[in-house]
Structure formats: structure tokens, C-alpha cells
Length: 320
Image (cartoon, rainbow, N blue to C red):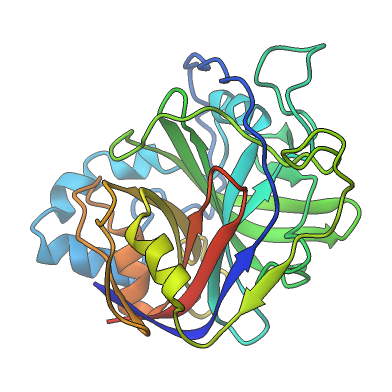
């Protein structure tokens, strides 16, 4: 698959210092309550189904997916999201272009609770609600773009334990000061493939990686093609985050955005030219969420985080 950027790559010079690893959260029995309009017999839209059938996997996937993909957060997932130092988000700008970004905790673990509890970033007051107490920062491609009724896909990824979970929904509330409230449409777990173990990290406005440094807003640069430095960043990437989405007619919960993760050794992303990146194919859960979205809507976003500086490279384009 190739992605051809048609909107500027962006690079944020924010700093996210490394913290101690979060403890793994034990599994608990899931809730088993579904709204009357939940498509329990088919949680996939037409693009996903098309690829499942093409791969000869649709019958196998449908034997377990309708129970695996839920319209709520099991208690274990509520606890998981509360403990995260950052979330990967997938959303669109005002022109409909897809972007991936990182929503990051403003400080480290709450020492009065359990290690790894970043209570300042996420709360889940009930199984269908996530309150994210931040917004994309100034300079981010999605700064000021996530509004009420926006589709939002989220990925929580715990590098220390290689756990990851995904949730998709729509925004009920969004303000610069209070963050965002997400109404859950779909929630499910992902396997730990391709995750490189790392320590947890978060945004620290006071230190920014240097003791006593004065806080400043993240800086960013924009361009319509890949620079030599950006090409080097892409070629050296070992972790990337993708954003895809499909919004059909109506408010079907199978529509929406998906945030996902890919990883590999340096060089697993190929740069064909200053406008084209080639992503390898990955074996996964055979849901074909990302590729199924691209069958219906070729717009996609890609973020490459810099775990040393806290910066990130954001790309938006179309898949071919």
C-alpha cells in the first residue's frame, strides 16, 4: 500500500520525558449488555466485509467478532484507559483530510494511587463514555479540529506490557479547557504483534526534557512534500500510527474512524519519492478495519513519533 501526501507533513517540537513503566492490568469478566439497535450479528461495514470475503476469512471472523467487538467498554478496558499516559487519535480536519495524532498526559503517574495511573488524562465514568482531558496542541494538524459530533478513533497502547485496545465513537462535548467526551460506538482489543517494548512517557510543560527549562508552545513546520530530514525520519521509524475512516449515510455505529499501530525494524517504511511512502502488508486479526476503511475512503493519516525528543511527523494523503 502506498500513501501519497497531499497535505503538509508536520513536525512538532514538543517534549515528552520518559517515565517508569506502568503495571499490567489484569483481565476481568466483560459486561454483556447491548443496546437494542446494536448490530450484534454484523459489526463490520461493507468495505471490511468485502476484504474479509476476498481473503476467505469472513465466516471465520464472524464466528467470534460479534461478541469480541462491543458497544461499550468492559471494566478492564475502563481501567486500561485510565492508566494511559497517551492515546493515539484518528480524526479529520475541516476539509475532511484524515490525520493521526497523540493526546498526551500533562504530567506523570499519580503517586497517591497506583503506579502508572495517569488520572489526569482519561476518565471513564461509565461503560459508554470516555473523558479525555486534553486536546491536540497548538501546531498539531488537528488543533481546534475535533468538535461535537466528530468521529474519533482512539488507540491505547501500553508499550511496557505490549497491550493495546481500540475504541471508536463520536464526540459529545469538546472545549479547549475541559478536553473531549467520547460516546463509545465500538470497543475491542488488539493482539500484541509488532509492538516494541518501551517505557511510558508523557508531556511535561515545566521540564520539557531539561531541568528548569521555561515552558513554550510546541513549534511546527509544514510543507507539501517530504524534506530530506523527514525522509530520514521515515526510513528510521520503528513505530507508526495510522488513521483511517469511513462515514456512510446515517449514524450506523459501524461507521467512524480507526486509529491503529504498525511497527517493524528501521527501513520497514519505504520512501519511493518526496510524495510517496510504501507501507508493507501486515498479518493481523483479519478484521481489515484500516484497509476496509480505505476501500470506501482512500484518505489516511500517518504519525511517526520521536520517542527521544517528543516530536512527531504527521502526514496526510491518499492510499493507493
